[in-house]
Length: 173
Image (cartoon, rainbow, N blue to C red; front, side, top):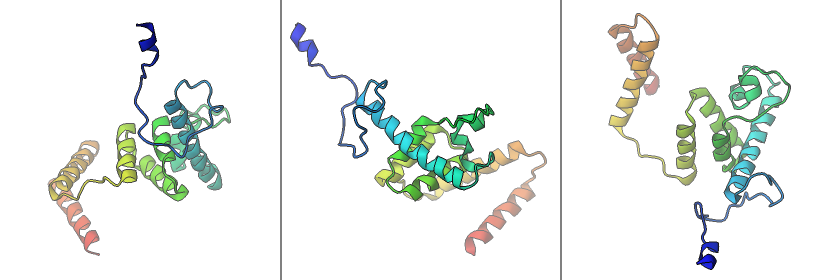
C-alpha cells in the first residue's frame, strides 16, 4: 500500500513541451513546474511592457501604468512591481514582441477583466476566434448603448439614433 501512493501524480498534466520553460534554478520558491513557467512568462511580458513604458518617457498616465502596482496604487516607492500576473503570463506566451505590446495596450484601454483578457489571448493564440455573428454584434452594441445611457444623464432616443447613424456612416467610409 505504501509503494503505490508514492507514484501518484497530482495536478494538471503537462500537455506539451513549453519552449519558454525556465531553468530549474529560477524561482525556487515556486513549488511546481507549471508555476515556474507562469512566472517566467509573466516576467518576459512584463519586461517588454516596462521597456515600452520607459521608451515613452515613464509617464504616470501611460496606458501601461495599469500593469504596475506602484503607479496604480500611488505608492511612489520607485520600484516597479507587476500587477495582473495571469494576464502577464498569457501575454508572455506570445512570441512576437510587438504583438505583446499591441494586446497589452488593448487590454489596458478596454479595461478588460482578467478572465476576459486571458480567454481572448488564448483564443487568438490558438486560432480559435469565434466566427462573426450579426446577432452577437447587435447584443454587444445594445449593451454598450445601455452602459453609456446609464452613465450619462439626459441620453434620449434621438441622441442614440444619431450616434448609430454616425457609426454607420463611419463604417461606410
